[in-house]
Length: 401
Image (tube, rainbow, N blue to C red; front, side, top):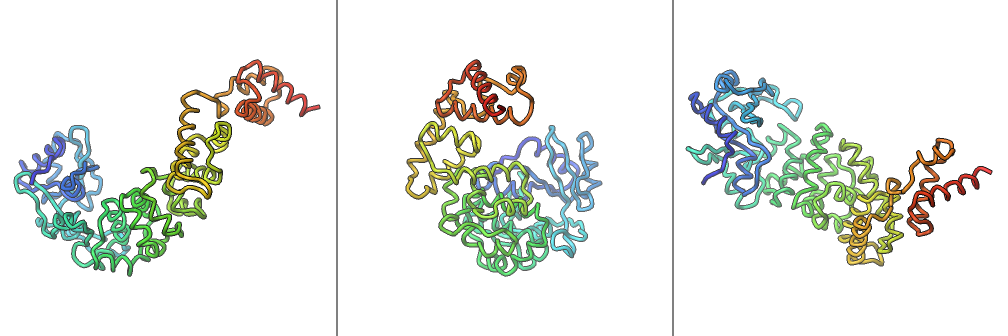
């Protein structure tokens, strides 16, 4: 078996080898390489202790990112590589992080502390794959299995419970029976974990290829984790059919109390706002009519309406079909390509034009622009500056007599 390791990572391995130390790429990069996926990042483990590592990295910039736990980040060819000493974790009194670690010269002892077998593999170009817990076989069998006793692994770090569900969704793998049993028994422990971390894992879960199985199958466990009540099973079982877009999927997963659910997961304001706009747009009726579609875009924004139509292709509203949403989407594209006005920026006038014409600055200007836009969309006015300025003057005088 051969894994294609990038040159900047090979440089780090070579420096450690030249210093007389074992060193391997480890964890997710090995897993993804075996699966034929492009790793997001490359981690290295080594028998060298931090001071020994840094001696090997003379000439490279290095950062003590977690030196108390044996981690140094080497900057190789401008890219970061996390390098960690083989270690044995101490007790986990907070249910998340080891209180202390003991460095070891044994790779197997280091791999034994990891969460799942598929993440407990290491690779060296000369020594090949080191796989003491049969992670490669579990990859073939499409299984998520804890290293050792699941109860022990989850007691050490409760976030691993949610990570098991996330990996199951991301990879489309089943969770091995004993591991699944521990997930179901211990899910409530996740409530002790920082909500930011829960939010990160849950959003990755939602984007996985196996999301349509994991969400309904582990609904009760996710609720024990503190995840707000989700949509009904028939809805969740079709989530995978939506585009791989987080805001669309979250808008469907949480049909009720969306803002509360997403704030509890500590998602950013932009994501929450986008999801709310999508849900508002979902209250509209799908229409292929040019005017109605442009009015919807004016109210909720182009992106929210586009996302709403994506959702309606999978979940048609009563009395409508997926084809209706498809045709509305085509009309939306026609509107965008032709440059037809649907927002204030596309009007041939601005608030400054009105101020220059003597209309007092204030809320009235915004209201006038909005009325003009509606009239343009409805075909009552042409989008020309002189025409719009004249109409604005008429409206202003009428409202201020």
